[in-house]
Amino acid sequence: MQGGGEDRVLGESQLLFLANAFAGRLASDKGAELILLEVPNAGQFDPESESGLPGVQSIDLGLEPMLQSEHDERTRIYVATPKLFGTRALIGELVAFPPGTVSQNHHHVGAEHFQYVLRGEATVYLNETPQRLEAGDLLYKYDRERHYCENDGSGELVFVEFFVPGEYETVWADPERQCAWSPTGKNALGGEPSRHIATHTSDGSYHQDV
Image (cartoon, rainbow, N blue to C red; front, side, top):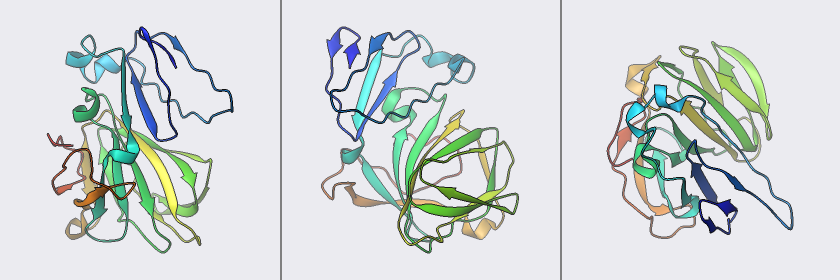
């Protein structure tokens, strides 16, 4: 990638955050798949960070801490947070569901989000109506739309999801089963993570170490 006054070589686990004023060029000799998320008028969600963000920021997702769900076998790696990129306009995570895993029914208040399925297949329930998902599908969930997911396929389900804005409220159908995430002490590659994230609930509130 060329831009911001320097050249960068990007790996398959690299994630880039580009400020609104960034201009640059991406090129690949062997071909590449790119997921591009743009937040129009991001300043309306986080006015304080609109003018002070660096042009280019990057992280290696392979080194980020992996978290484990306290109620099931799901894992999570954060890909966009205020701690990582300095803005509350969005938050994102990479989530993996082993076969047979079912998340809890819930909805969000004050944010909409989407999921892009990287691999696997599953059934997602939107307001209790089933929809089939497979790799390459994009799923959009509206504010207050109830949802949960079941990996009823034979392999692991992996998707990346982003919420806009990055702070909201989560309401669980069963408050006793609200989702909480704990550190595994490892990164995605099985080594020492780049930082520590304490146990927390995924309720949409701001956590300083996330």
